[in-house]
Image 1 (cartoon, one colour):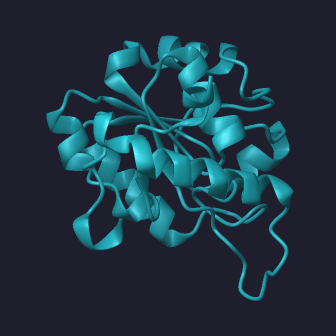
Image 2 (cartoon, rainbow, N blue to C red):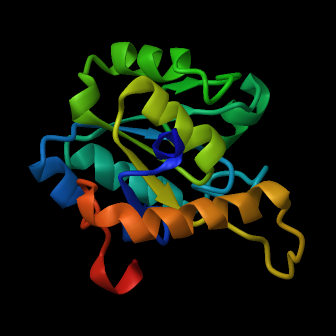
Length: 178
């Protein structure tokens, strides 16, 4: 039961993921969360995020956003990006994840979910049978309170680290940024 909260890999950020290695392993689609995965909660896409998506698309990777945000917030984030999305996703329910696969026309084995929350993003990926990458959540400068759920995530991540030698996909982060 605890394994439903375990990611397949854990990386420092979306910028530390080795997307070329994912592509070489047959991954063709990336299902991203927005808040605290790509940008701090509520922020617009940054020039760095926009450049990342352009690079991913040039590599031949399809992308989609799966978010619990409403449409107005999601469209504001996507102002300079041409990326499909599913908002009001009700994560960790598998429906949005499976719909994303249909929209991108890929199999579960060809996709990876990338998010910052174990209880929503990773659990939703696992409930859907899709591999996942957990990234460290983006924290605002000077932010001191992170919420009880984040402390529970730290505990689950510690257990995952002790058992991960048997998990596939753990070597897809750039070595200096694990």
